[in-house]
Image (cartoon, rainbow, N blue to C red; front, side):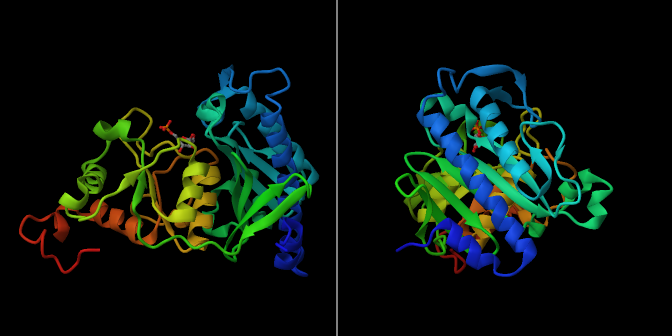
Length: 347
Ligand code: F6P
């Protein structure tokens, strides 16, 4: 009999009061995710979930009805949990809930919202951070902690199944919502990302805006058996990071959203606090890697709640390889006409 989320959280937190608060928070978030899932399945009780509102969110994207429904559901969950500060993509400033409490949440209530009206998987991404005494005087400072400080992180996927990918810093675990049971049960033991990748995920329509290093990396994947990689790659791009990340957890691969030359995209599209950090924590706990191309995501010190970061994550060897292209693409032996076919360093 697989372990329930409740039982898993109970044993993961033991007698540690802070860990018990984290567990309590995850339980509340899971209940909110079930409500969001029910709203999606019901088709939004008459309202069009994918309808655009006349507004942009704190992250600068156009808001849709479901973004707001999800934001409310998770804010209510946070109010019921031991949460001092709630920092959401949908709100310009963090909301102060219970000052003096031990935890803060950074959350993207609805990831992949461009996919809402197309019935493609979407999700919720969350990061749970500690609130220490120093943060109480200046709530904004809580969201300047690097991702390595996260106590727990994960994401829900509203897809054919409602899944929760979760790490509390002890491996990455996947739970599935069982309507008959009325809760989440563990789907797999601790997940391990395959070391080598055969699939890459990137929005290739931005090719002309990328730096030469990213172009070189993708060119080499596309060249397949006839190129320096000497093997064929497949490409997948769902456009909902939660879905792309889950696929990579299941069968390996690499995801890239680099900075590019479009106005406002120097640091890519994705947000450090509530997109890159939680994904990076889950990916690392599953044996993968996550960087901004060069630096480990979890080491980056954020300047504020809505800052962006380039993001590369997935199979470790592949992410490291992107790092080598970024450092000096011309130095790669594989790309050199002289050594291309007989390099000892081919990975
Ligand atoms: O805003 C986040 C997000 O929707 C991710 O889920 C997804 O990976 C990315 O943006 C899609 O970006 P684009 O619209 O450039 O393909």
